[in-house]
Image (tube, rainbow over all chains, first blue to last red; front, side, top):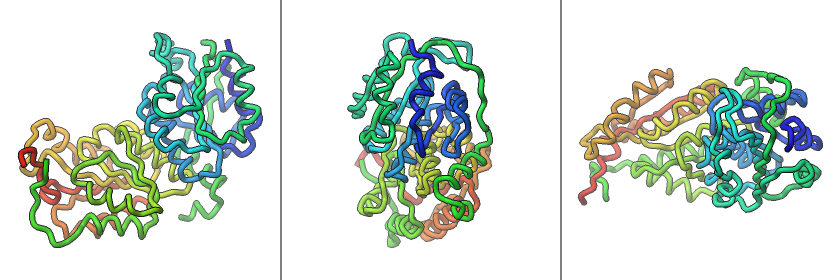
Length: 193
Length: 179
């Protein structure tokens, strides 16, 4: 089974100027383990909203590649957002769910994905046709090798092992993250608006 | 279902739309309410406005945070019960990160309300907003709508804060299930 840190490394190895929205919890630490980046937006709260932040960005910046990386628990809290995203189907958005079938930050309680709930099937039902369930690193590689060339709304549910990597905490201050991100994406003058 | 409304000369939904257009709002998120019907229709006719129908109002918090990160401005239209659906995302994303946000909220559960299930959330809406220190202005009369929306939109985007305009049930007319 894929280790989460192997998955995040594989996913972002050809990242370049891709925007990454990190859903709260383990996926935030995973992305942070690769180093800091001004185009990371670390979501530390508002569980269930990571994908919607991705949609707002995708609609605002249709020529910019955006990846939302989040966990199964966070995704389960925002299932309706898949329907909203499916309706708009922004071509520049990819949603990647690291699915360890548990709530890793609260004592490893089981999530619904451990009991037969398929996020991939829900995504397909929401109109995201390009949805895949991934078990092997080689399957993920087919996606990650061309990450900047994907031209359709994409949903990946990656089954990962239950072990965590070393804890790497990213920057927490939301106002700083927001302004740093806008400066990197929109330029210095955006801070004067 | 229809609306029992007082006779109106001023087209205040059109006035709100014009303020949105003048201020370059491009992401208009909403969960429909009968009181927002005309405003939604005006916005839909504007090619520059992306209309984002939400499954729940909470989605609007993340959406408009993302919009602002990407350089877009917008707003969320909802009814008072929808505020209840938003609270954690509103506090933990929008307020925690000082994102600008204008919410335009049509009120239920007050002026001649027919549905008792609307009353608890409607009558708590201002207290909930107050508990979150959100600058809130209520419009009871049609002639105060335009300047209020303009000022609250300006406050949100100039000062990076959350503002709410409450369009009272007296203004929009109580919903009637009988006619």
